[in-house]
Length: 176
Image (tube, rainbow, N blue to C red):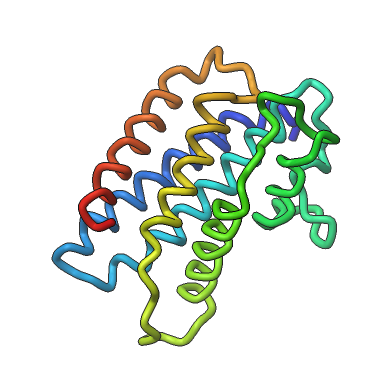
């Protein structure tokens, strides 16, 4: 797929991930085990947001978002983050400059996601609300504040992404 053609589907995946995270977070008030799906949804949303970001420049290549070990799959979060933080792929202000705390928060959520998908059932998952907020902050930056892709034609989905981010931030505030 041509890099610019990945942007729309990637933004749709961001929106779906955010909607799932918000739905499961709200549902966890009555059914606590549903909360385990929040990190899965947020990591998916972040991965899709990074794919959109790395596909935005005219110079974007097919390999900018693929996994070198499995070229038919998107790269893991760590590699996408490394690329989004590199001037080889992006220029300021789109270049993702993250403090160490945010990187650790993202890693915490990725570990929680991996625990849900690959870990044994019944293991107590740590609360990671602050880490969730860090992912929302990164999504805000790469999709809304400093998108590397042209926003024309994506206005509606970007508005929906903004609404979902705001709703999740409000939902996380009292649990903080």
